[in-house]
Image (cartoon, rainbow, N blue to C red; front, side, top):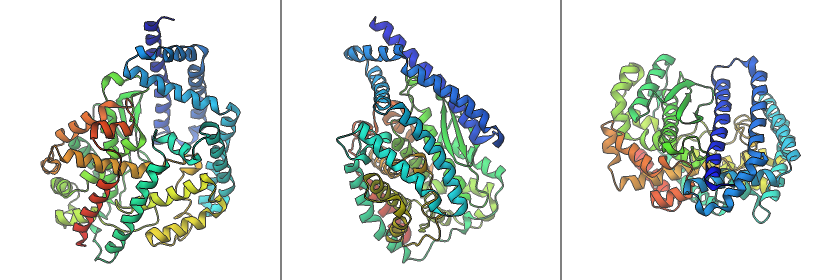
Length: 500
């Protein structure tokens, strides 16, 4: 086989994979936005064919021979080609280690479990879901034995979402969270509570959409490349490449803060995706380095920028124009305090910037214990309630506000929750490094995001999947992964806000 021809064939193989993914992503976008409920079977038929063809393409003798040849000649490949090759080889190893029939049974189990999850929520009874969840946990343990015989089975879960980071790193992170945040929350609870009534009211979807478009334009989203739509579950999606991005947001007509920070979070993801180097387009590297790194960008623009005093003061006149009542009855400082209110609650998705990390801590400790076999699924409800009492001081009133609130475990996503907190940590580390080079909030006060976005693009966005998150943080942000910057950010912000 000729090396130059093999390189061309590999480039075309990646383009084919991207094209198949483009079609699948369009179907997903349609399902989550405008498709009527009765069309699900039609989409399922199309996706079944697409996924079969994509798997056939990846596993064809020609493709496997091509990858093997390139791997034998990897010293002659560019950094980008080697990284893309390793991405494909890793995927193949995972598929080879687990018998195909096991994948089939696991897929059927997940489908059954999702039906049980909805039924359990309808009945407000975790017991309806527990048998299927126990089977999922056992199946993941089995997959871990196939793939990582020499490591903790929970490391296998983490590896699926964050390459190269294992229990040792996450244990240290969550030990820091556990040590620092609960005492801070206790102090805040003892202080006079913040009034957030300025964010409550009856807001039209039209005005909230106008706010969303204003925010996207303000922070530098190119609306010729990024389309805005709505969905019950907000998300940001690349269609085929970073040249075509879609943001799906949700408008909360009774809570202005919810609508504002949902769009800011998704905008951060979209900035990352569209900011990748154009020469990564139509390769398997055209995408975020990791879920935690893209989450860091969502949290950077949502919280570190969007909940800052500088940002609120800048957008305040426009908020008053859009929402004269109730915003016009409050000062910028009162709005700033309202959007940063801390209040321990039962649900993760509605939690504030501080307590959110404790919601994830609970899930981290529970899922790690389940995968290791230290916690039986039948005991999960009681263990959940005990940890919410310990960390948040709350007794879950029912399973809907407790163990049944997330679908992640039901779809097999053990190891995903920790990435939310890792994204917060990366966001704080990025801010700390950026602050050494530019006065971030001086630019925010002027509504000027060009230099902030350029810094992120130069250090993070443009590399796509060329490096993993650990490499990005060490090479381009200039710091190993640690929670110090995040803890310092939280303690400084809330000490001042609540006059602790």
